[in-house]
Length: 121
Image (cartoon, rainbow, N blue to C red; front, side):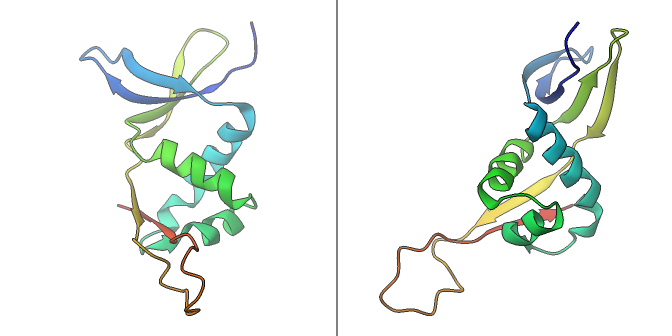
């Protein structure tokens, strides 16, 4: 059997069988675990750049992972003995993106991307 992979489940039936899910690659799985560890610290709106610094990752990869994790019902892993271990139930992440970059004080460069903020509830 191959290595165990993290699975993000978005919807399951009454029995707990996953209906809508996908598996993460190894690096994404490590990033999700690092984000789950720092979630209790995110009580206020935190920029994604600060989260990337906290988990020692690049900004685009962290943004991609947070967007995947935002609508998750649970995060689990299938062990070698066939059992499924749930790592997180409903890790509720609120993601907010503004229309424009609020930190942009330059008049000529309006093409800068807006900052993405994350909050844990």
